[in-house]
Image (tube, rainbow, N blue to C red; front, side, top):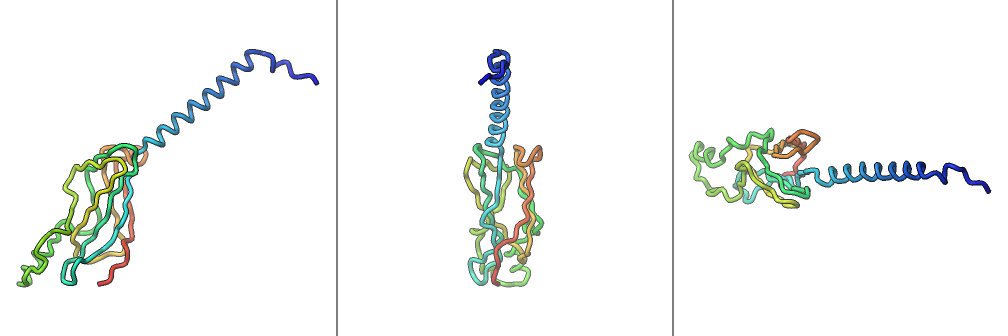
Length: 161
């Protein structure tokens, strides 16, 4: 059995080793970029009411699935919640503010750091539940390609009034 002569040529083996090294280097760069990518997810999106007479609360968790911490700069969504004050509405109707505290309202205050693999819960009083909520999170690091913002369209769990 005659083997091809190029198998005995040192230049051929140098070329094979160089190609293998190039493939390994490209894979290493791809893997590192993929591993160090920043990822934020939403979890536990729901409407809730802690007492029968209490206002409705829209709550959700922001989860950092990244291998490093990330700073959240803004959370915006299409519900008109920030200006909604259920206690002011009770005062306008001359009702006693039976929901006398904001213990369940945990709004985003701005510029919060979220550690790696950590979660932070937020909740907002809302006037009425909606079937679909679009929420946008802005961070200090790119979340998708070069964009530092990521939008989520969520369908909160069913709410029984």
